[in-house]
Each structure stands twice: as C-alpha cells, then as structure tokens.
Length: 101
Image (cartoon, rainbow, N blue to C red; front, side):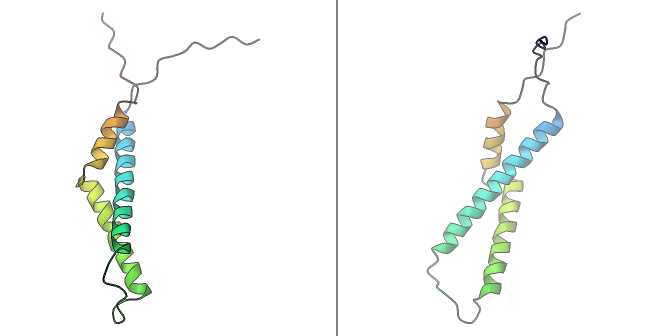
C-alpha cells in the first residue's frame, strides 16, 4: 500500500494564466460576434444579387465578418470578453499570503 501524498495548495495564477484566460475570453467573444453577424446576414431582405452575388461575394463577406469579429473582440467593443474574464478569474487559485517573519 502506498502512502497518500499530502494535498498542497494550488499555485498562484501566473501572468501567463491571466493572458491565456484573456485570449480565451476574446476568442469566445469573437465566435459570438461571428454567429450574430451570420444570423443577421441570413435574414437579409436583399435577396440574391445576380450581378455582384455568387460564391466569391459570400466568401468575401464571411472573411470580412470574421475579421470584424476578431477586431471587435480584441478592442473590447461589446465587453463580453471582459465580463467572461472577470467571472473566470474568480475561479483561478488565489495567491498564497506572504509568510510573516
């Protein structure tokens, strides 16, 4: 029978943990904005444009929407990433208090 290892306190979150959390939150916001734009475009009343429409135009529009979503998430335009980061930061382990001498 092997001895049970003692439970150690979780390590304090590092700067890289916070940076990864921020990047993940921004990525989620970008995905959310892309979905909103896709839904808005799906309900467009313009219909098919026989002159300027087609697969190339759809591809360009999708690429433009994706880039806009990335820029909006990085800039914090909607604030969703900021709110997600704040909520998930609460779940990161707390820094251990400094030992008094």
